Image 1 (tube, rainbow, N blue to C red):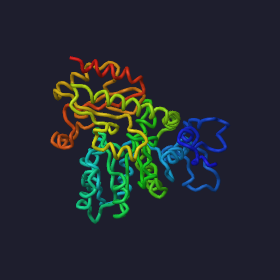
Image 2: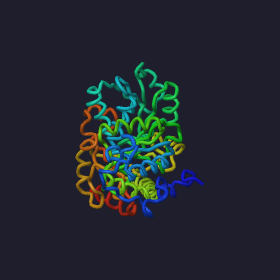
Image 3: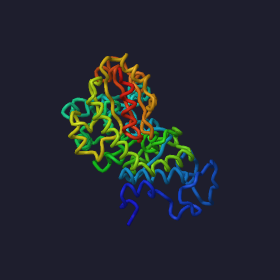
Image 4: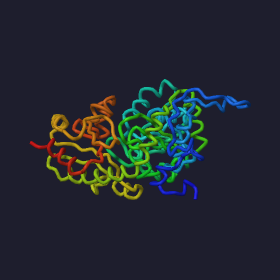
Length: 385
């Protein structure tokens, strides 16, 4: 039985390991070395060097992530944005045009709206849940379509089967940010996507102690992105590789707990008089609940909600939290909360935020793996009159 035939719980531990093991080590040692002996007769392309992302740590991790995402090849990068920007610059090429989901992570949105012009690239935002509207945005130089598995911060679900079908019909590269879902809940490549990117800083690592990114998918595409990454320099250092590999080993256990906790908390918040609306795809009231049930193995650890009383109520709530940390990140074992208008989406024009439903009263919670009753008690305390 090959390693790829094992189940996910086994692959997060064993996939990608060199065989035979290095010096008998059960895990891949940290190769904290920037100089490697060049063998007689080897070409320049055989050179081992950290920036080239070909250290044993980097290679083993890329192989593991390819298996987890059901891809042909995987690559680790210095951050999620390094994975996203390098992939887009590679796939779009000179003068390319991108179709992209309109409800996006703020860093991706800012790259498109503030930096794309400098690279001679263009984009059009689309409603990822309305396939009938996409055709009008296609141009002769459109080369890719980009969506998120679960959007940030309103946890909406794109019409993923339609994205894949549309991309094939128009010979576009389909790219998906799978950070929020993780391969535990959704494996986009198995559903026909060409490329998956992650901020591995979040759930894949899960311990809030490193920054990293991931690209996985078809070998031809990943190799092209790898070549571009070598020039841009966004490689992942060996110690971070070691930490990410360690974090991945508990991914399945952690994500299942995130799923369970978030669903319990979303249901609790939905019954609170102080809460105007809860955004969580596990709730039957969510517009994309049916789509999430059909595609996903779990609904994820991210939710957002709006308090009655607007921005002042939201600010008061944030200041009263005790267990939940006020921080603009996500995906760790600890619960975190943030107001997107002041953090991840602060760079977006207020009118654009309002159009997308990212209000001043919106609070996003990355639900951790603590006891759900303790998280709920902290939420109730912060909401109390």
